Amino acid sequence: MRTPTMNTYKTIRLAIIFFAVASASSRLHAAGEPVVRRGDDGSTVLTFPNGQTFSLPAGKGLLGPSSNPTSQTPFANADGSLIAVNEQPMTKTSFVHLYMKGADGRFIEIKNVNQKIGKAAPASAQKIDTDFIRVERLSGKTLDIETEDFGSKPTKRLLFKVEIAADGAIRAR
Image 1 (cartoon, rainbow, N blue to C red):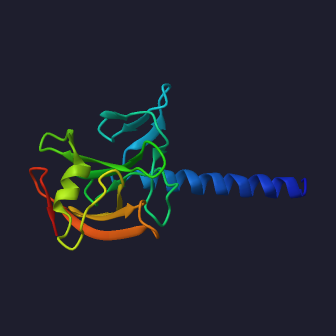
Image 2 (cartoon, rainbow, N blue to C red; image 1 turned 45 degrees about the horizontal axis):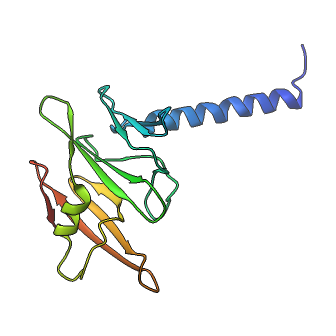
């Protein structure tokens, strides 16, 4: 019988690491988050668990929350009925895309989300820059939102919450 060599242990360790990463990846999409890939034309393509695809225009890609801005993972609530994506077409811009699952199991995109969030912002917010709105967190039908005013020195950051109604309306929380 041959004694295991150091390379054997490295191979086993790599296999365990690969298995752990693969398992984490499958858990990542278990809650209903779409799989993200880059289209041939530079667009961002979202493929939902039900097979539906949505395409976002070519740009920098997806933007994660302020705690992890390079994250390319969409947000999904626990039952997978609401999906939020921060699209970053260029530097210092972020557009929110919301997808709601209907009774038939198909997703629809809520249109003009940044403008709707801007209108739903708290009265204490003087003016919301609708060119930069980012989802920080999604829980149930509540979005934790961040907006930044890059024109002010120092940059002003505002955090607030909005609620997504069953009809897709966006309201202050």
